[in-house]
Length: 119
Image (cartoon, rainbow, N blue to C red; front, side, top):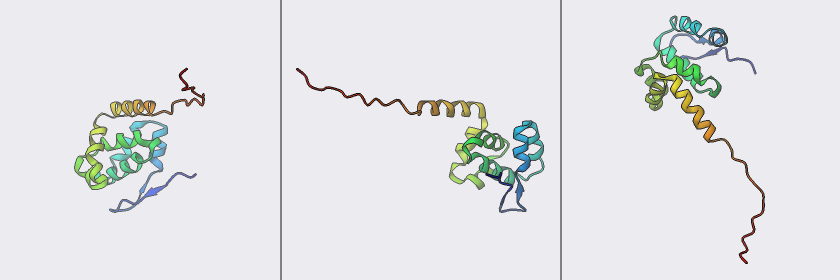
């Protein structure tokens, strides 16, 4: 599956996502450099794009941590406050999500027959 190259921002022009994918695989500081070139609204939209991908949620949260609540509200709507809170302490949020995922793992099921006859 090819990487998505662009997303529509509803403002200005489309944003090329390829530099973000490259930055993630190299140095997170490169993301900072890219973010400096974008408007606050574009940053929030890109944060939403990555937040919506489970395997890219960390990047989405890290990008959202650079956004003001007003910009997150414009993009995330009712979920903005949750994303804002989660993005203020990304490491804690990710640790909590990992704990939740471990507790939701499927438990082994036994097909052993149980004898309920009481003699």
